[in-house]
Image 1: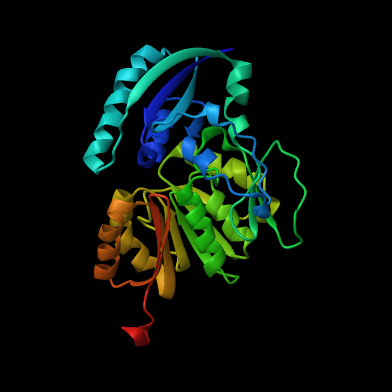
Image 2 (image 1 turned 180 degrees about the horizontal axis):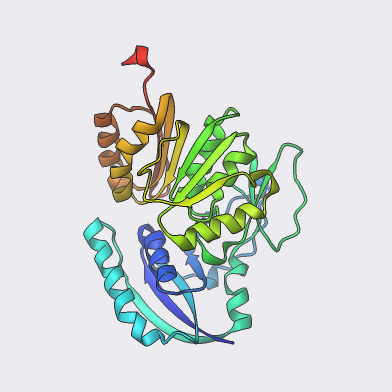
Length: 317
């Protein structure tokens, strides 16, 4: 089978949004080439296995390669894709250089294109993300392995926003919590929550493709098999009382989520947010404080931030 590769060169902050647009437009997989992945390759003390070559990466922006089957006539889809990408600027996202290129590829090339950029990666003290096709031996007795198939690239554990989220979960999960994962994508945060000892985990995403991706990845991790995954718009209609709400989504989507998260959190519950580009940090902090949250921690990795906020106990109010 032949495939058509659509390359979009964009900014780091627009990667997740552009990837979602491509998937929603019919792409069967995306590969992300970011020079920062090479420049910020962790050293061996964390046990990573990397096989990256600097020559494979563009020096300007990030290249997203999306793969469309030849049953779709891509030239008809491109104008709509370009229009949706251009509209991201209305959400405050920088999309430059915003260039586009189309190439034909064989199925063999498509199947291996993104795999060369994805290797086992220890993302926190205890959590290691391992692609589903890789053999892997534990480096330490207390290591927890998350197996993922990143074929639809809704969060593979390597993006700074995902790493920040995983670090926050590892820091604040104590065991037996009820956790709501909003905008679950690949399901990596839900799986990690179970690996770290959460009792009940409920994952939500507006995108049906993401819901399927999350369910597929959950099946790869037997300890996470009881995670529930549903299509839902943020937390609308959700009445489950949660100890933790975690969301790795765009800043503009976090804003309307803030009152919904506050409503479902138990007193003393935590709101873990990531996906926040640096220049939106103060906006999110301000909105959370106005809602009544107490800010516990702010972390930053490259241009991305995560925030841990707490719903006050009754005696604290």
